[in-house]
Image 1: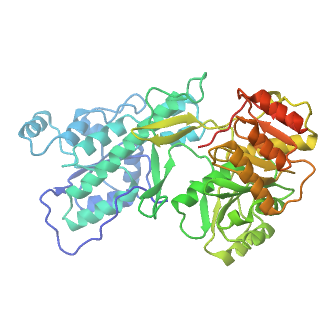
Image 2 (image 1 turned 135 degrees about the horizontal axis):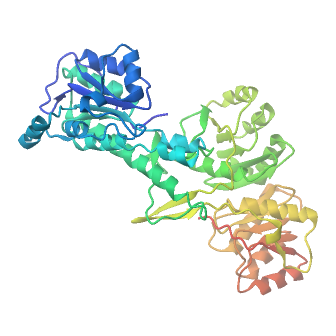
Image 3 (image 1 turned 180 degrees about the horizontal axis):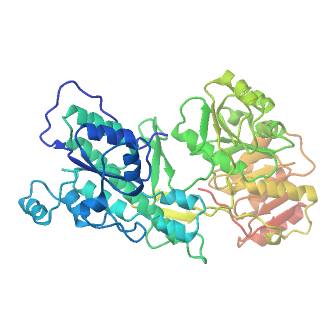
Length: 541
């Protein structure tokens, strides 16, 4: 993972004079993440830096043979209240916040015997990790860091004189700077580290606020008066949707949802912005099904979806729906990718394959197409998980809960004279699940747990119906004995339904709710169609 850290500058043979370079004479270290801590502290000590520390950090350094002064000894005030109070003291914050070029600050330090602290090394209590572990309420509260963020903000504010380090990945850059500048750090580095520090505290507070907002038992996903979003940069992408746009992938802090963002890439070229966006859409769609299923996506819309006895059958069925559009598409599976399915997939050019896991034999097959990006997630996402979805608009953002709506039997109402057959009902339910993941206006034809035609993103439902029918004709399907059509919203006029009937539809599933519902029902009855109203809409923009 690539973090938002400061790139290390290579040491230089000659000292570079920086008028704002600050010699590091005293450093306070208090970290929960102790990776690289001892090695870093040893090199600070080699530069003659006095070390202050607290609790477990101090023990780790002392056990390594380093000379360390406890903060309690430095302040003359003991840690108390189970460690809640230890660094909240004027001798800590005064030493961090004082301006070295301000005579009043310097005099105050002398009057109150406050020594300079030139470097602060702090990373915070693992709050997000504690929440993600399923810890109880009290444990989560105790993992809200108070002293750490306070010191970090103090040091970052006073970055003109103090070096603030919040990520072990920045140790190397700091040491290189000190090696180059006779134990001092440059203003440019301190300023970059301060920016990282404020980003960390903002993220930390955002995670806490989000968690607290979800503690109301009456609302598992509230929309609070103030909302903040935080994420950690995983990687910089080559560009955005187009080459002239900048882009990066950020992981939402506190979320472990399996998907494209957190997947492991086993092979293939670097993922692009569009790859990640489309792969996310494909994987979320295929998660809707319990039986083996495959979805093929192009430009965030499905061009083929199917279930089968196994992934090979599901893939073959999904591909048949629209093999032209599937070229260069994204393939998502809800089962482990096996050798036979992999061999079939590479017969057609694909950009990305994503699955919860991949057999080693399948990976051997895929290596013959080394540019194909292969991703594994370790698990499938829960389609019912409450979560917020955010869309930027000029000057603001739209926030809504995710479409986790699941159609249940008691929601369905047969409105036609004819009841659907068991086979038709299965087709209807399958098509309605797919419809949820198709851009509006959405029409999906389905037979035998396979999409036969998909009409997406049109300005009217009649055209979506006709496009779906055209796709069905291009695929060369024989007219099946039963064919379902799903619509993501009601038919505002009978023409969309009539177009579907002309394509061979025998059963219709739609939300209902139009002022012309009676007209649409009449058109269905005149053509002998079975029709169900769900009362649930699945717009997707």
